[in-house]
Amino acid sequence: MIAGLSFFLFGCEQETTRMPGYEVHGIDVSHYQAEIDWESVAEQGVQFAFVKASEGMTLIDTLFCDNWAAMKAADIRRGAYHFFRPQTPVYEQAFNFQTAVQIEPGDLPPVLDVEVLDGVSKVKLVSSVLTWLYLSEIHYGVKPILYTNLKFYNKYLAGHFDEYPLWIARYSRREPRPACGRDWQFWQYGNRGNLQGIAGPVDFNVFQGDMAQLDSLCYFPAPVLSEVAQR
Image (tube, rainbow, N blue to C red):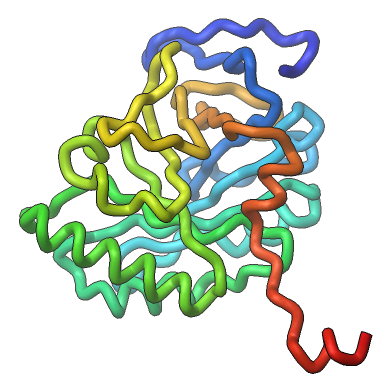
């Protein structure tokens, strides 16, 4: 909880204010927020942020590189996400993200944003999502995070990805409760937040845990066996 702020949450058409009862707060952005003053954002108690990196087979967010570098300079725990297109070949989507995003020690795991069916069956969706997650885990050496909204998760994804960290969107005062009973790690609770350094509204999120637990979720490469032997 951050002192000096009013902790009230209104509907999605009104301003979103900080959610009480959580220690670790964050945001997520894309090129829609335009140029961001990340130093100013960090000074307002934002400890982590996710930024859009890619979508589908070829799209790269136009401000990803600028945001990615500036987030690190501001000492904000940073993560990157890919917007998933179920009808697009999954291997090409994984390659698109991997080409754009170089994860460094201390960064959050990659995120797969799954919000649409694009006309595919539930079986096809689950299979393709699992393939993207697997390919990314092999490439980066860390389990990716799955993002979706609560309704979509309960209808199409619940029970299939319990081993992956979960980031749930639910714009409400009440915590999301996945149908399968599993825990969530991140909760996007509103999309009308306001911060100095960002010109327009921004999504507000919380992490279910403290900073030490957030850091334990971040990517840190395993030591090379030869290096361990030399110690």
